[in-house]
Image (cartoon, rainbow, N blue to C red):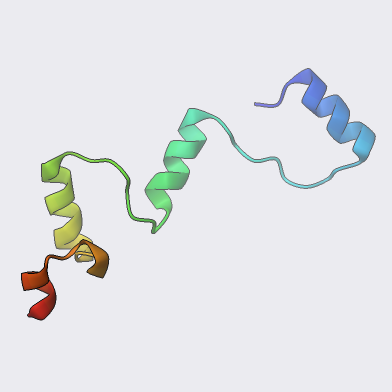
Amino acid sequence: METRNQKLIRDILGDDAQTTDNSLQGKAFSRATSNAIPKTMTPWEWEEWYAMHGKPEHFKTNEESAS
């Protein structure tokens, strides 16, 4: 949601660029649809994520990397 002042500044500068959604819902949707590695999850969510996407090389133990 754009504030009145943000709209005035955008109108004065003539910025026709798309505004970004900085709401919590917009950020959550962006994180959910990105391919980035999540930062925080429960151990069970991590297990499920690793099963779906594989474990990144830098997170593997020495035994996992050797195989």
